[in-house]
Amino acid sequence: MKNRSKFYKVGLFFILCTLIIAVPYKESKVNAASANFYDIPSSYWASQEIRYLSSRSIINGYQNSKGSYFAPERTVTRAQAAKMIVLAKGANEARVSERVFSDVSKGHWAAGWIQKAVQLNIFDGKKDGTFAPDEPLKRSQMAKIIVKAFGLTVENNEVEPFTDVYINHEFRPYVSTLYQLGITTGSGNQFNPGKHIKRSEFATFLTRTLNTSYRKIPSTDKQPNLETKPTQSAKTATVTADILNVRSGSSTNSRVIGQLSFGNIVNITFVDGGWARILYNDQVGYVSASYLNIGSTTSEAINLENQVIVLDAGHGGKDPGAIGHGMYEKDIVFEVVNLLEQKMKDTGAKVILTRSSDVYPSLNDRVKIANQNGADIFVSVHANAGPSTAHGTETYYDSSKNPQSAEGKKLAAEIQQQIVSLLGTRDRGVKDAEFLVITQTKMPSVLVELGFISNSDDAKKLAEQRSLFADAIYNGILAYYEKR
Ligand SMILES: [Zn+2]
Image 1 (cartoon, rainbow, N blue to C red):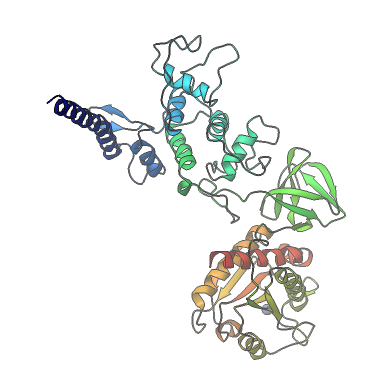
Image 2 (spheres, helix red, strand yellow):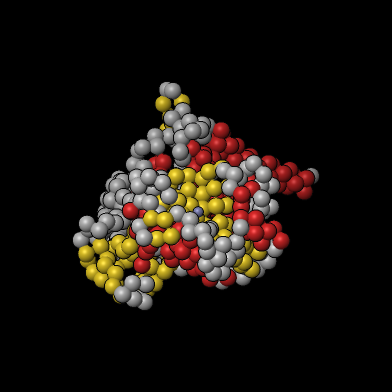
């Protein structure tokens, strides 16, 4: 009987424990369901992130007579941030036996959370011995706190992705780390370090920290809207001009802040409109991208050893192609294709040219070279002509007869985007047309019109920036293979 009673007590204890464990679990389920805050429609930009955090009871909503709401625009105070980060770390509040800071009494609602955050080395107090629990947290401070709390590291936190978090900015290593890990994308080229962080933003940062599938990893694509996709991360480039002016802005009207010389290596943070943003003596500067040999971040990663790539320099020999500004199309594209061939060979691909001198293979000859060698892709390079006002880049694929037109279209899009981005030419788009060399070839095939030889701005680029055109096509081909 005594034993039985003991058994009974143990059983009761077990049931009680189960209840104790089950009740909060059930409650958090309820929270998850009520994560349908009436002010956060599913179309809201951070709705997934808010749902993620609230379902884990790391962030809570508010209640009023209409139901529960999130108040995404409200700022986050230091005390609130301390509690949320301690929770996100899977820790609990500290037991408080005495005043935590001069302005945080033992009875303060967040005293235990603040004490824990300080114990975990996530938060520091202020120099004057206060904590300022009700002070709104700035975005820059949040960056530092998240990096420290979660021990986030990157190879090089010197990378400066935002114009307003410059190289010697106190918070730059933290912002740079978050950017490179895809936790922040900023807004435009700005991070707004001094702005107070909103609940929606805080939820996004914390969710991306906890769950990598929410992250927005910097991409090398051109970014018209940086809110969703950041600019590419830094890579190095070598100066190819004897003297290269470094300017304060991306225009020849901008002030010259210094000079680089041949062979100098620079870190570039992005290239747009033909201008590369670089770090120069610890400050941001701009140089013309046409005088840089830009290393590709992807070249080592991608191996095209089993690929056959046929490159077709348009025209040749008796056929000069378009003529303008003292140049022949056949010479421009021949040089671009030869520069491209050198780069492509570094990937291990077998590269075949349709012509290796100033001769004219017929269009059918070019097709035969591609088909008979079992080419995996075919890229024909041309320059356009038209009225002097017409300008820009366009890239063609064929959907009428080419059996791989869907792939051709993808390849065209990558090359088009790279040229427009690196050269700053007008984007005339990816187009579908029945040029013989892309209709009769059996592999993904594109025909690139680099720019207009008949337009003075484009002609200048076609004359002076052939290496950059080759870089752009190369980047486009690699981007295509990376996504395939
Ligand atoms: Zn042509």
